[in-house]
Image (tube, rainbow, N blue to C red; front, top):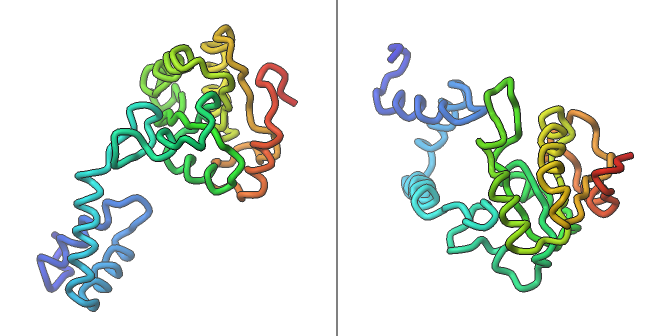
Length: 205
C-alpha cells in the first residue's frame, strides 16, 4: 500500500483492476470509483459474470476455441464445412475472422506463435494436435490465417512443412494485409477479401 487511498478496500480493488492488460492505476481507480457510484447490484452482477466465466468457460478439445459445452458452437454446427480448417493464433482471431462471414469451415486455435526470442517453440503451441487432426479428420484444406509478422510467417512455414505431405491443400491469406499488422486490428473488408482470395502456401505472391 502506498498510503494515497482513504480506504484499504478501495486500494485493494484498484490493485486487482490494475493487473488487467492495458489498465494502469489511474484507469483502475476511475473504474473502481465508477463502480462505487453505481447501484450495488451492478457491482454484484459484474462480479458474478466474471466468476461464472472463469468457472464455466473451457477450451474446446477439438479446436481449442472457448466453449461452455463439450464442443464449441462452431465445431458442433452442422452448417459448417468440417473439411476446411482455418488456423489462427488465438480466440480473438476466431472472433475477427467470424466477423467477416467469409469462412464457413472450422478453426484450430494455436494459442500462440513460434517465437524463439520469447522462448516459444513448436511444442509450446497446438501444432501437434493440428497435424493429428488433419490426419484423423481427413481435412481437405488448411487455411493459415496468422498475422503477417515475422513470428506469423515462421509459424506458417513450420506448419506447412509438417503438413505438406498430408494430402491437405495448404493455403495462406492473400497479401492484402499490411506486413507487421496483427490480424485482430485488420478491418473486416480487407480481411474478408484476403480469406476469399487465399492462395496456395507453396506459391505465395
